[in-house]
Length: 601
Image (cartoon, rainbow, N blue to C red; front, side):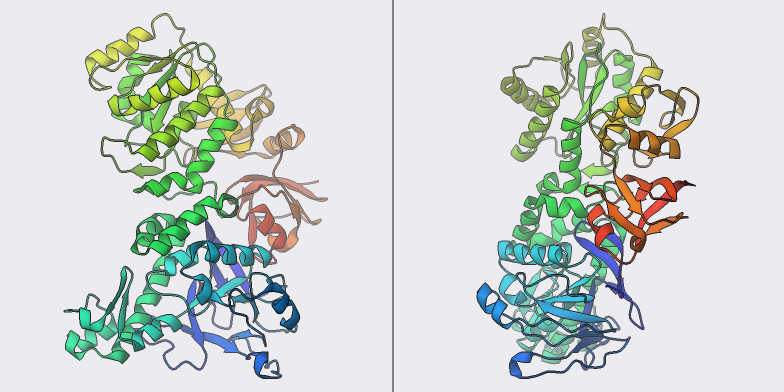
């Protein structure tokens, strides 16, 4: 049972956690042996001296030390280099003894399992780092085999250049061994590369070691080691801050490009979608920077596109589709360009925005994360990958919808996408832009194309918005099942969903564009045919939050930020998940659900 690790924040596979020793340590962290003389040096940012290694059993019998509350003790072990045959590992592996203090077990990807320790040391790490597929298989296999609320330690491999990639993959603890060795070789490490001291004409750093030297001529081997350790510690601290902000991926898309291996690893993780998706929140307040084409492969982007093309149902049956370009200002409807589009459309068409990297955004989902939470680089040209992605999403969207007419009010750079979709899906677009979407002639063409179509009322848009968000959030058909007798209160975007008797079922949150359910709304969800994300708890009445130890079971598809139903013998409620479903079941510490409404049963 894990007693010393509690995860507080999640950003993909990276986590911000607390190692609950005598002096609590926030992870990701740079650690070292309690006997390391360099611990804590380098301007106060050096490694934390918490590791006590009991030793290897290859050299003979090793006894379990007494241990204490200030250290993480690596239990007696037999480590294997990467590539060791499985039958050899099976023959010589020793199970760690059960102890009452904070401990770590040494494992390989093949021997990793729940061994009752608080941390796991991945043996043979130098054999994996530098080979993207081997590294990902090793880390993912180990991470999925050990409990969620335990730390993964990768010794002997970290540098300032690769640290962010290692931590993004799911590693929690690193050491400075490699950085120190490189220092003894007079290699000066930075986040973008490393240099031999003879190659440098000046020191491109202001850490304590570099400031003390003053000039490259006075900078020796010991100073190089101190600089390398300080730079690595600073990079780990930078990753911690990015996790707090929910923006580690934004940073990584730039940082990974400093090494081909790091770029390959990041892209390899994107291909292991299930691993990242389970660990990626469904909502977050931080903006998403779409600065590279790798953004197209982010979980948040792929998840939005998948839900729009498999869950969302268009309820504007009598109006044509009006495709329009996105806007820099979010939400789109409040931008100057979209206000001008609205003046021409006058509720006679269903507006869907085309954008990279999101794909397509129906007007009802313009608030829903990440549709109003991204910023992208605007060059006036679409890359081949952007064209392929948006074309695929638009084509899949049109396969699920039935419009009387398709109107494309888009500039020239968007038209190629429409023409590609038209050819591949056998549809026809009516183009209304002459020069620019907001010029008078183009807006006049748009207004003319909509003549004869009936207007929908603002109240109809509000109803359709709440139902569309329910489809996106809970599953196909959820809007009609949860709100068959819908009454809407409030003004957009602060909308409230009531039943026919005026009882509130849900409210639309303007910050995330998702629905927050009431107790009555949760009951409707549970009683509907739409799959319910349920957290089953022991017989108690939660107040404020549900902790992981009180959970008996949870739906596998729960993700951080999801609406969930809380169900137990003594209580029923609704809340927002702070862990994924599998993590709720595995964890023995931490807040699993923030409770919004609960009633004793």
